[in-house]
Every structure is written in C-alpha cells, then in structure tokens.
Length: 360
Image (tube, rainbow, N blue to C red; front, side, top):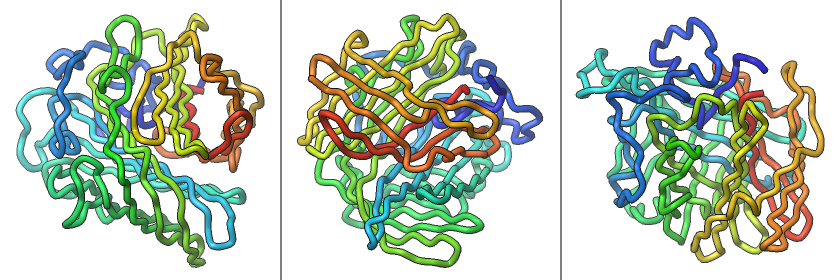
C-alpha cells in the first residue's frame, strides 16, 4: 500500500496546512479515522432543504461537489470528464475573516479518452474569494474553474448549470440539464460508512444530460452524453480499520442508475453499500448481502496493481455485469492520488459509468 491515497471521499485534512509536508496515509488524513471533536456530527433523520444544501456546510470538516460525465464526440468516440471541488475545515469554530479563514479548497479536473488521460489540480484559501460555493444563485468555483447556475436554474434539480475547467493541455465547457430532482443516497440521505457510527450526508444528481466542447492539444470536438454529480459532507467518514474503497456510478441503458461501493477493511471483511435509482428517480437501498463486487483483472499503474475490471452482481434483481475501463491508465497523479475513469459494462444490463479506486 502506498501513502498516496486520497480522493473525493478521502479528501480530509492534510491540505488544511497547504504545506503538504508529507502524504498521509488514509486513516491519518485529518479525521478519516480520528475523532471529530468540535465539528458537527452526522446523524440520521436530517431534513434536506434546497437550495440551502447545495451550498457549503462549514461546521462539518469535509465536503465535496463531484461531477463525472460519460460522453461521446461527433465521431462516436467515447470520453470522460471529471470536475471536483473539495472543501476542508482546518479547525472547528466560528468562521474567521480573510486569510485567517479556516476553509481550504482543492479542485481536480480530468479528461479521459482511450488514448490519453489528462488532469489538473488547484488549491485555494477560503475567505478571500478565490474559491467557494453559493447556494442561490448556485455557483461553485476555484479561480476560473466553475460549476454555475443560470437565471432559470431549478433548486430541486440543480439544473441547468454550466461547467468549465482547463489544464495545461486540455479544457472543456459543458451545459448540464436534468428533468428529475436530486436523489438522496443511503437512508434518506444518511450514508452509513461503518457499523460503528461513521457516516456522511449524501445526495446525487445522476440524471444530467451533458452537451458542450472538449479541447485536447488545441483540437476542439463537440461532445454529448450523461453526467452524475455527487454531494457529500461529513466530519468523520471512515473508521480506523478501513483502508480505502472501490466506488461505481452506473448509467443503465434502461434509464435506471446504480451507485455501488465497498469499503475495504484491514481484516478483509469488506462492507458493500448500494442504491438502485429507477428511471423516474425512486431509490431503493440494496442489502449488503445482496451485493457481489468481484475484481476480475488488474492493471499496472503508477507502481500499483489496480483492479480496473470488475464483475458486479445483485442476485435479487437478476443483475450481473462485467465492467471494463475506457483507459486502464486513468491515474489521478495529483498531490493526493487515486484512480478514476470512465467504464462501460455488459451483461444482463449494459451502459456506462465511472469507477474510483482509493487506498491501493
């Protein structure tokens, strides 16, 4: 295992210093497996309200706005985009002004095709306007990367919004629209991460239709497809013996959606979680005992063996698929590194999605 293990669900602390003096292991990374004294706690029964919950929750230690898109260009070639904004509170308590503000922001952007994977990373301090999120009108930004609402953005669907980001050798600009409300993950938005109380608040907008442009090495193409946004916040999302996770968001050709992940433990007793989302937006949790997530093939990436091909089964739904990555080398070699990239799947159902691997 490497010490370079972090991503959306592991973004939780070391950047609070911005010194990045060392790359912490997953459990030591500002509270993934530590106590959350002074920060707000995640408890069942929260009443979600919009647009308020589209905005930041600074009393909690960690938070993210995380979007992935499965697209095709005008020639029919597949590609994927990632746009992520993370917020981290360096310490609890009232929000300080200006440079003394304890909120630290980090963002990742990526483009993945079969022949290339490009990524970029940005950091910012809270309190000075360089990065932040506003609930109404919705806007999430860091420097000139942004996910932004327009005059007619609906609070229930968080749609339409525009999205843009750029790196040294790529850029993209999308418009995202959805005609169904956001969906609450887990137990009415309470997403349990262990049997001992670790949890997050978690909702998604898995119904975005995406359209826009992608530029790689000065070549511009039109792209369109589907996108999925995750919103999650917590103060203590993992337990001390949890080492990482394998997470999938799946767009089924039927119009249904599926979110699955397994949290890996040191003793090998991994814990799977899942949520089935119908084409009309109704959700149903999947019992842990009904989820089979089996790695089928590894890829050698960044000095690691990563399980990039999977067999997924949910017997109660007669669901059995094989997942393959568009590009096995989709390594996010950012300051806090992980694997994230688009996948396709076939079997009893077919479609596309995204896979994230952390802790390897």
